[in-house]
Amino acid sequence: MKMFFCNGKPYFSILKVSFLCIVVANFFIFLQTAPSFTTWIQQEALQEEWYEFVKDYRQTFRRSPPEGMSRWFEYAQRHECDTRGVNYQALNVDLEFFRQQNLDQGHKLDMDQVIEKGKQITDFFMAFSLEHHKLTIVEYHGKGWGFDWKPIQWKYTEHLMRGLLEPLRQHTPPLTLQFIVNMHDKARDASVNATYPVLSFCKQDYYTNDKKIPNHNNQTTAGKSHLFNATYNEGPHPNEHPFLASRDLLIPARSSLVFHRHDFWFWPMYSHGLNFADRDNVINWRGSTTGEWGTGPRFQMMRQYGGTRVHPLTDNGVSVDFAFASQIQTPDGEEGSLMQDGYRFANKMWYRELQQNKYILDVDGNGFTGRFPGLLRSGSLIFKSSHYREWYHGVMEPFQHYIPVNYDLSDLVEKVAWAHDHPDVVQQIVTASRKRVETRLRRDDSKCYTYRMLLEYQTLFEEQKQPKQTQT
Image 1 (cartoon, rainbow, N blue to C red):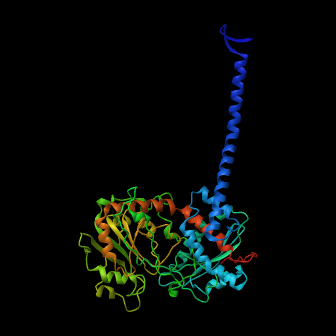
Image 2: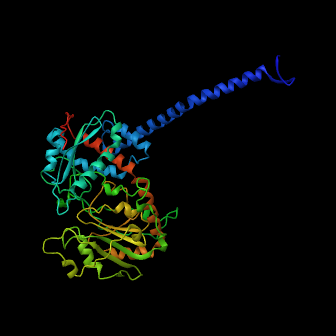
C-alpha cells in the first residue's frame, strides 16, 4: 500500500487520509445543518405545547381560541410569559357581559360605534385606531384644573399604548381595531350606556375585606406554612353590589411598568434596600389628599391612626407613621382646614426612605394608587386596602405576596401584630412578592396581556370595515 513520507518516514496511509477527510467533511455538514435541526426540534416542542394550550383553553373557557392566538402563543413563549395566568381568567369574566349581550341581541357589536359609545361613558379619554400595523390617535378629550396635566397624560398614554402594542407589529394578518381608553384613574360605573367596552387602568368590583389570616402553625412536608396553600374569597360579587360593577376591560397602567432597572437604570426602585430584619418596626404611609374630601379612605385612615406624630400601633412594639405629604384637589373654602382639623402632615418620603421600614400600607385615593407593584419589590411587607382591580389581579395573591386588610382598616392592628410575631413567615412573603414581580410583572408580561386582550376584544365585533382614521 502506498505510503506518504515525511523526513523519510511513513506518515499516513491513504486509508487514514481518506477517513480524516470524511470526518472533516461531515463536521462541516453538521455545522451547516445543526441550526436547522435545532430549530426543527424547537418547532416540534412549540407545536406540542400549543396543542396542550388549546386543549386547556377549551376546557377552561368552553370555546376555541380566537383567530391569531397561535401568533400570540409564539410571542408569549419566546418572551417567557405565563400563558395560563389567573389574570386571563379574570379577562374572560370581564368579556362575558359583552358576549352574553351579543347572544341576546343576535348580532355582534359594530366597531365603527366604539368611539361614539365610549364617549357616552367617559369624559376624559384617548381614542385609537389600529390598521396595517399602524396605531393612530383618532380623538382625545378632557378638561384640566389649574395647571393642566391633561396634555402630559395624553402624551404618556400615547407612549404607553405604542409600547404595549409593539408585538402587534409582527402579527399576521394585521388586526383592524378601534378602541377608547378611559384616562381617569378609576373605572366608570356600569350604566345603561355601557353596552360597548372601554379600556381602563382599573375597575371597581371587589374588596380586600374578610380575608382571615391562615393557620400558620400547621407545616407541610416541605416545611412551608399552609399560608401558601390557602384560597380566599375575593370580596362581594359585583352583582350583589351593582354600584361597584364596571364593564371596562383592563389594560396596564404606565405606573406599573416603570420600576425595572433594565428599563430605567436610574430608577431607584431597583434597590432591594436593607435586610428585612434590619428595618425599623414601623408601618408607613405617605400620600396626597386624594379621594372624597373628608370622607375618603385616606381621610378615615388619618383620623383613625394618623395622630400628631409617630406613635405606637400595637402592643408588641410596632409604631405607625402615617401622614399626608401634600394637599391637592382642595374644595373652595377648605384651604388650610386640614391643619386646623388636626390632620398630620410630613415631608414626602423617597423610595429608599420607605425601605427603612418593615411595613408599608397602600390605600386608595381617587382610584388605584399605581404604586403597588413597586412597593412589592421594596423588600418591605405590604398591607393593602382597596376595592380596585388592575390587570395583574390574581397574579399577586393575598397572604402569599401581600397582606390584605379591610377597606375600613378595622383589622389593621391585628394583622400588623401578627406579622411582627411571625418574622419567618413574613420573610417568605417578602421574598415571594419580589420574585413574583420580577418574573410576572415585567414589560414583556404587560405586552403579552395587552396582545391577548385585543385578540379577545376583536371577537366581540362583526367582520371589520375599514376604520376611520382622522388624525387629531
